Length: 394
Ligand SMILES: Nc1ncnc2c1ncn2[C@@H]1O[C@H](COP(=O)(O)OP(=O)(O)OP(=O)(O)O)[C@@H](O)[C@H]1O
Ligand SMILES: O=C(O)[C@H](O)COP(=O)(O)O
Image (cartoon, rainbow, N blue to C red; front, side, top):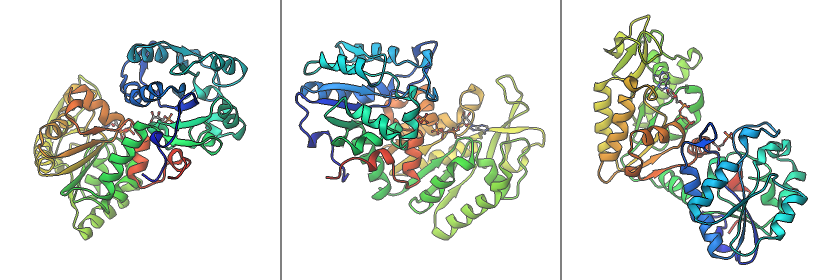
């Protein structure tokens, strides 16, 4: 990476504004997945060990520039304190005199968690005044929030133009793994793209077609491709305005010598629910009144085989409605194939695929699970991430 990292600056005794992504899933005030908090620990611990005064900032949810009581970072602060094994002070604001007063009392190695930065309208607008108010709190800026690196906000981008700005250890690792995978891939290189909408994955598919040996399509978006091949898809997800685009992707793959894999069978249901009637059908035989909610067993077998022969696999988006057990088999089969494949480096592109891997208790068997959903997608699309671009060059 050509950007300065934490190791390039001296932070001893300095006030460090460290942007993290503590946007964790929460239900009734309880954190349901603490992966992102754990992923930030190496940077926080490093700063503590170096004797920095660690000022942590994060967004949580989408409060739209207002204080939303349920979106305070208080539960995160409590959990962070347990994980670090030390006291973490929590501020009720993210800047201003009350925060400055708290920082005045900090000694080397102390940790302070600021309030949700999205309580202020200037955050998402990347307001220079808000960026200045954040910058006034610190001497150095560290961005460890890979999950929010695709956002040009005051605490992810604006502030980096004011203070010396470097990447944290998680940010560095994410960029390193994803960057190496895309720029110098071990082959055969396979991408698995699933999820709900073609619209969301156009850029990713386009970019990956230039890079991969095998492209595997699954999930709800597969049925636009199935339709593009001339088959009926019943009530399955279909983006009619993307059929031509899907055709062009299939043709482009052929022209480039990329093996393009689509479902050959599907699990169809007469309703989108756990108690729907369901059955396996060949892909040409999806009944008019039914919808395909998972790839079928033959498809899963073919995908498993491709995965096991690959040296590098990037996976983004589930193969079916994995949240409902009877439609989770395709996603599970892909996760298991990745877990079992020997000598295959597996990169899970965050979001729902990461949640699926967690659900099947296979997270530890994956080589790298990105903490970024949207950020990893944009990275795979080949887009520059504003939160990274704004950091100081080496
Ligand atoms: N055949 C299908 N029909 C309808 N919905 C489906 C189908 N297959 C998968 N899905 C749904 O797609 C959703 C995931 O789609 P999405 O595009 O958000 O995935 P993702 O790329 O992993 O998400 P993220 O952007 O968070 O990484 C899941 O909730 C899943 O239930
Ligand atoms: O969960 C995420 O993908 C990141 O924290 C970014 O959140 P956002 O989509 O609300 O900007």
